[in-house]
Amino acid sequence: MTAPASSSSSSSSSFLPGADGWVPAARRVPSPNFDARPDGMPVDLVVLHNISLPPGQFGSGDIEAFFQNRLDPDKHPFFATIHQIQVSAHFLVTRSGELVQFVPCTQRAWHAGQSEFFGRARCNDFSIGIEIEGTDDVPFTAAQYNTTAALVRALRAAYPVQAIAGHSDIAPGRKTDPGPHFDWNRFARLAGVAPNLLPYRPSHD
Ligand SMILES: [Zn+2]
Image 1 (cartoon, protein in one colour):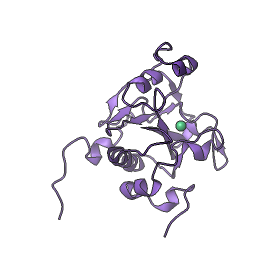
Image 2 (cartoon, rainbow, N blue to C red):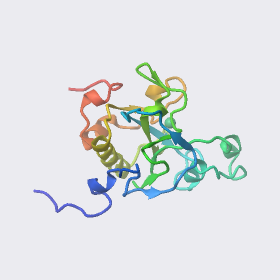
Image 3 (cartoon, helix red, strand yellow):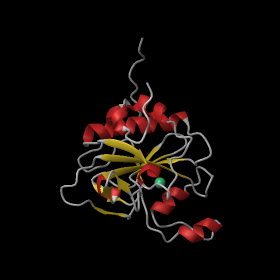
């Protein structure tokens, strides 16, 4: 018993990046914080993060401002400490499950920082970064799991993705996101991701 396929933005095809690296289902908020990937570098890692600005608050629009270098340092004490940092991610999944894209997948976004994936340093070179709006302290929403899973399915169809990791996996001791509330098993089930694509997760049988 299957419902008719939805023609909304949640259909999987619209999550497929075009040749230009932009995803049709995403709202585009271009960030200037990107550069070229190294020549011939395959895109074979997806990195999941969480972010909230101000910390613990959702829906302020400040994440978009941060990735566009227009965060107001006077709006919140924390912003005064970070507003000059130039960072980005390819994607943000908001609490309602909306997909926002800042950098085309073909380019290198600046999300991972100092990082290492099984001996390969500088994970930004070969990864796609997805920020999920949230914190280490609260559960993510069902809509966020659905959107993140649909996006990862499409990214796997477009690029030779070999693994999906958390920021905390590739920058241990420095980063804690996406945090203890991110349900990797739920995500894997929705995204159709086999355990071998989650090298940092203990597999359950
Ligand atoms: Zn992160």
